[in-house]
Length: 259
Image (cartoon, rainbow, N blue to C red; front, side):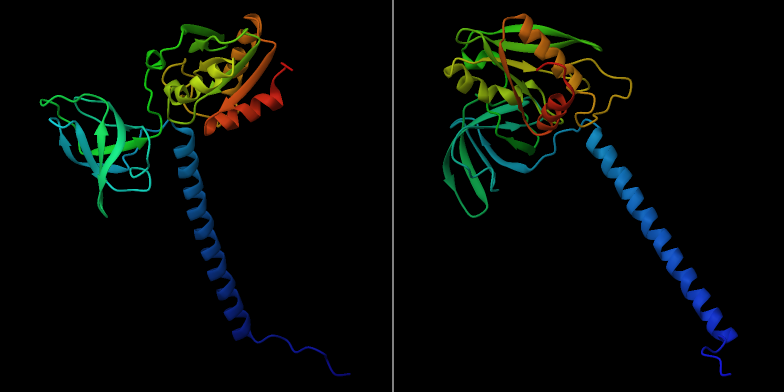
C-alpha cells in the first residue's frame, strides 16, 4: 500500500516554524502599535482639549481696525465670526472680508483693538461670534442647575409663553458661549432657551476623573436641566447638541426618565 502523503522533511518543519514565529512577532508588534494608538486617541478624546490654532495673524492695523489672516476655507467665508487669540486680547470679533489674495484675507475688526495691544500670531478661527449673553440684547438670567456633582451654571433666555424650552448643550473642549448664536433664532420662535454646562467643561463641577465620557455620564447633568425646565413650567423640551453635545443628547434620550 502506497502512502498518500510523505512525511515532512526536518528542513521543511524548521522553515515553517520560523515563518510562523516571524508572523507571530509581526502580528504582536502590529497589535501593540494599534493598541498604543487606540489608547492615545481615547485619552485625546476624553481629556478636555485646549483650542488648537488654525490660522495666523499676518497684520493688525489698529488705525484702520482691520486684521489680515492667512487664507483658509474658514477665514475667507463671508459673514461675522470670531478669533480666539492669546495676549492682551483673548477674543476678537471679525466682520466682512475687505480684500483677499491667494494667501491672505483682510477683514474688518468689530472688536476695538488699541495700539498697545500685544497679540500672539497663532490664532483659532471660530463661528461663535457672540462671547457673552449680554451681547444678544435679550432678557436673560444666570441660573444654577442642581446635579449629582453640584450646581451647574446655566443661562436662561425666556421667550413666548414659556411652555416650550430648548436646552442647548455645547461640544467638547468649549463652553456655553458656543450656543449663544442660536438663541436669537429660538427666541424669535417663542421658544425659551436654557444654555447649560456639564461636568468637566471648566464651568460645571469636576468629576473625580476630570475627563469626558462622550456623553456616558454627562447626560445626567443635562437630565437635571430637563427637570429644572419642567419645574419652571416647560411642557415640551427640545434638546439641541453641538458636536459632543449631540452625543450627550442621544444618551439622554436613551437613559432619561423624563418623557
